Length: 431
Image 1 (cartoon, rainbow, N blue to C red):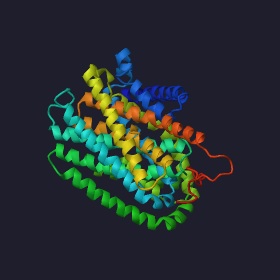
Image 2: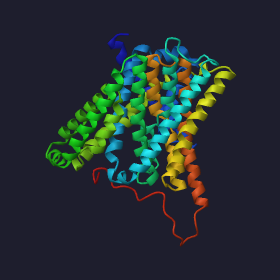
Image 3: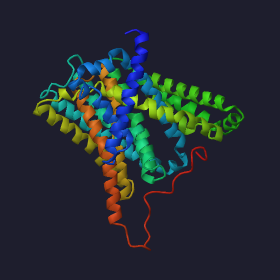
């Protein structure tokens, strides 16, 4: 396909994606699901699991192979913009008292699903044909464990934001634990890729690069106030240009070291200077990123998912076992860890629920594994099922805990510690 033909193909594909995402989101709203879940489901519907099954010619016409890298890159723009905004709106003063709890929850949320996923893949390899022939068995098994250890950090941030939970203790604890969880998971993924390539390079690069990122962010945090005053003196378009250039540099750096672009975007947002000028710039760039570009990534992942491969009782049983291992490894483990460090039951249950959502980050991880040949197409589709089920669970289960609390609410006049604190100040009014 020539570049002249690629342009109109891209524009039509974007129209189809955006309309499908909006219709799916409206349909799922009746079930209490946030728009981001509708976008995720829409991506699968536009792939071979539905559109490719009922109208393969239409799918090929709308999403030819030459278009897929373009969709991937455009989707990255939406991802990094959204994660930058999530970091910019996060109040770091709320995270300091949560360091111990976040560390415990994150450790449990990585180690338990890692062990369960690795063990499950090892046990299943001689029973069901799900592993690529060219890859060593330990590498694929470890990859499955890492995939189950991932938390949907961007999706969690979006669910917390859309439900107005940013100021709650469990929202802040989940964000802190989820961020730490996914950094560890991506370092582990770099280690798995190193084993696959029989080289320690990717792992060493990720560790050294993460250390360099922390150093740069610390320097930026120290210079935040003077830089904010300088930005206030610039024209609005200059501030916007500075934000975009800095954001894309951070995304490029973390992508290069193997920690993925979203971490550079989020961590930059956390330490970025706060001022009215920056608030306006963030407000200008965010809508297009979330509304136009972010849904493109879900469609890109959906194009690699084929549920038609999951046929036969053995594969279906293994898929169910993957879902069960994912839920036990995240929801149960994180709930118990939160309780162990003294969090009350309502907070612990909600933290476990939010940490259990895999969504976006698992889609990213398994796309990496598929591209590297570490997982087969069947295993990829199984892990997409895990991502869908655990993400679809999040909002209904959160609503279940809310209903339970309302039924258990004490009579008027009795003291009761609220689970949700007052809503945070608007972005730019404080770190």
